[in-house]
Image 1 (cartoon, one colour):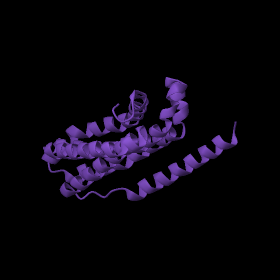
Image 2 (tube, one colour):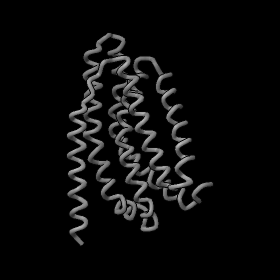
Image 3 (cartoon, rainbow, N blue to C red):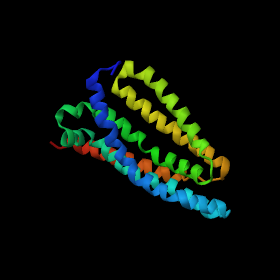
Length: 204
């Protein structure tokens, strides 16, 4: 409000919660792992736990990425339908935030792992560090870019949280990250976006 005014706050208050919907399904799946993680860790069934974690990392991207790219491609349409034409101005910020939501389920999976193995201090430290990063990047970007700066800051914070969580998780367990699956999914998603934008430009 101080840097950009109430209009920008209203626009951002629509864009952010709408994109957060993307993370609900993977987060629900990841939370199922919490009691299982605790049980498997106690029983020293690390191979089963490792396979489950790797599967969650793989499928969370496969589920979220197409949905995020749909929101990215049709953000203006979504805002117009649900909130009216006055909120279409939040479209660019919503596109950026939709990309940031791709990182959230992976970070949430790592957090639930730490809670399951009795290390709640690790996600607490990650959240504190990421919140500080988010606060400082907001101070730097919002005066210059407004809600676009806030969206960039949030997206970068989600990325930092995901990467930090993965690094910390691999300190406990030598996970094989599905990099190839992620790359194929991203390439397929970008091809979809290219087709969508080509059709949007070609069709009235």
